[in-house]
Length: 279
Ligand code: NGS
Image (tube, rainbow, N blue to C red; front, side, top):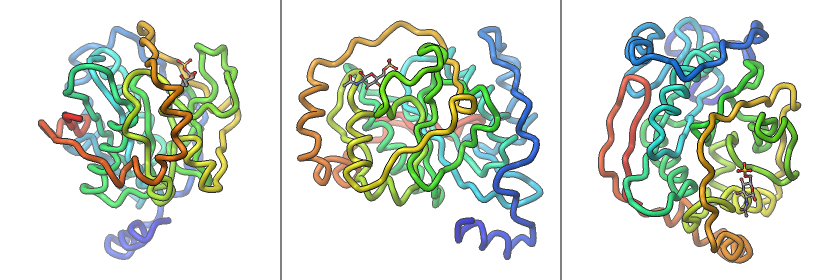
């Protein structure tokens, strides 16, 4: 448990929740595209979600204080599916969590990695999260036993994807959904900020982790099963290989320690903390 969780135990007289809840076997119903506005509007009330998309178990103190950070632009349908599926999922795992949607306001190429850095920085202003999950909005975990918490080593979570026929395309892959301890993220200086457009930013992040002497871990393919929601393929960026090759030279000088951005708007919506940013 984190020092923060232990302090809460003292303060509230509630017990610690178990590290992994027992009844994680049943899979949740797979969400479909027909989720109605109606369901989404009443979800926060029904599930007792705090404004800003935060929740913690009422009867015990969670050992996992997790920020779920999602980079976002223009995927309304997917966001609705993601939120309506993930809240019940995360609650079953008894996490103390909040969902952050970091939306790119700036036109032009999408910068997934920089949005994730921003989510990290902003989350820490709200709560001392010890664990970060960086998560694409189109990924739906299929197994409740896939704990949304941090392991000792940074973990590649979405390693068993339907679109890859549940195979890992290459062993260094660190994209989609990953879990990393706050102190480890700080140690690797977060993501690079210069990857505009699709591809490479996750490979660069992987090298940062290896470069700092850590290794990746994964749960078994049976547990790490995901379904990817359908969308049209992004255009790969042209300079991703160049940026990757020069990556090593920028580990110390390009990351959370040099992060600059402007918040256009921030709203605590019922199901998520929304941060609209100008890169
Ligand atoms: C690699 C990309 C990664 C990407 C991975 C899987 O080629 O960023 O494919 O992509 N690296 C480069 O482009 C250098 S996927 O098939 O899931 O769309 O994550």
